[in-house]
Amino acid sequence: MKEGSGSDLIPITVAYGDGIGPEIMNATLHILREAGARIQPEVIEIGEQVYLRGVDTGIEPSAWDSVRRTRVFLKAPITTPQGGGYKSLNVSMRKALGLYANVRPSIAYAPFVPTLHPTMNVVIVRENEEDLYGGIEHRQTEQVYQCLKLITRPGSTKVIRYAFEYARAYQRKRVTCFVKDNIMKLTDGLFHRVFDEVAAEYPDIESDSWIVDIGAAKLAATPEMFDVIVMPNLYGDILSDVAAQISGSIGLGGSANIGESCAMFEAIHGSAPRMAGQNRANPSGLLLAAVMMLVHIGQGETAAQIHNAWLRTLEDGVHTPDIFQEGASTERVGTSEFAAAVAARLGQMPQVLAPVRYDAAPKIPVAVEPPAVAAMPANRQLVGVDVFLNWEGEGPAALGAALSAVPNTPWSLKVITNRGVKVWPNGFPETFCTDHWRCRFQAAGEAAVRPTDVLALLQQVVAAGFDVIKTENLYTFDGAPGFSAVHG
Ligand code: NAD
Image (cartoon, rainbow, N blue to C red; front, top):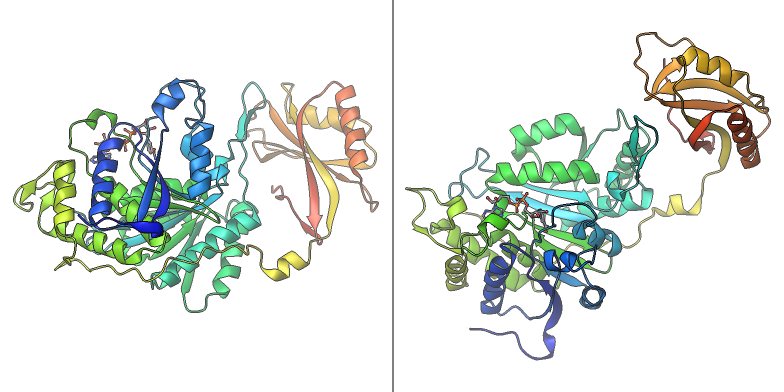
């Protein structure tokens, strides 16, 4: 056995997790040790037992200390106990450590792992901190609940720039953006605009964009047409699982969560509790995550050696039950035997599948603002306010009449919508209305409006007996509206 030794060992934090976690972590660390990876694992406990002790985040403060000290975390999957009150450890980790990019390669290993897409080789870079995953949700009325979708310029810039750096480091040709900016013109529109700006900084790499619905359909039907795809959090969450599944097996996928100062590496699958303790789980997802980790800490040569030995093991037909095929596979093995087979092939290269080489990890972008944007903050001006009401009266015409009668200088009631559809003035009687109304007031004349005018308006509206549940100020930025228009 080769052992990393001496002062060149890099401390990493390791969590064995729950369910199949300990088995696949043992298998992975065995291979890393045999390959001579220069790492010093520091073991922490996270997951089910920690949750059940009453720590609602699933991780003790001392474990946080280790991750923040080593800045590199190899994590096995955990089980989130059933029932309410437990926070997602993964979501907390990503947000607290600023792990803004989730990198998930989905690669076909045909003919050794069956797939309809034998040449598929796609890397999804998912934005990891924003979008609908902020956990900002509210019940506002009897009938209506909302979840806030936040897309920021710095958040988008970081992840998109990382996607281009990734493409450059791994000699990939194209980065594609998936968004839904035909509907969400401001939020997804910003992501798309930043994509175009960042793409212009990388003239050596092709770029294009798809609306996410048709993009997803193309990804599922003809994944070979994509190379690197970058997308906001929710689309990336869903489509990276789709991509992993159609590449052959979700059990083979590894992922990296990259931040400016920390990084976390894990399999994309969960803890598969029903399979736990049976030596049947495929450790490949965690092993490939560990390969990404070795590249990240500058041990690309060891990473390539492990990856190539793993490819050779697949080619030799030594397969765990999830990918075993009668006739095509040669040996059905358990988790630990699979690890031993990979370790025995260290130094060997694949014969059919393309061998890998890792020269350098992608650069981690730290400067997140294009200088031109940072230098010139926009001139922001208050021009109106959307007042949201919980109201169960006679319908839009009655609401419009009652609200228009409220003294509201310097405002003028422009429009009322229900679930975004214009219902006053001149709405259609066919439009279904809930108890949640958005009433848009804008400045009546030329005079600028001030925040105190918003407060005065709210006072009048509340005094007239209306149930105000929230407001959104309407601003222009350098004269351009920073709010969606109401059509109809
Ligand atoms: P899962 O991914 O754990 O398992 C789904 C199925 O996939 C399993 O029944 C099994 O048939 C197969 N599978 C998964 N990993 C495999 C492997 N390595 N080898 C062979 N087959 C494998 O998903 P689930 O059952 O929905 O979730 C189980 C638990 O895992 C839940 O508590 C969930 O919250 C948790 N989870 C954790 C993470 C994480 O820690 N990153 C991610 C997803 C789910």
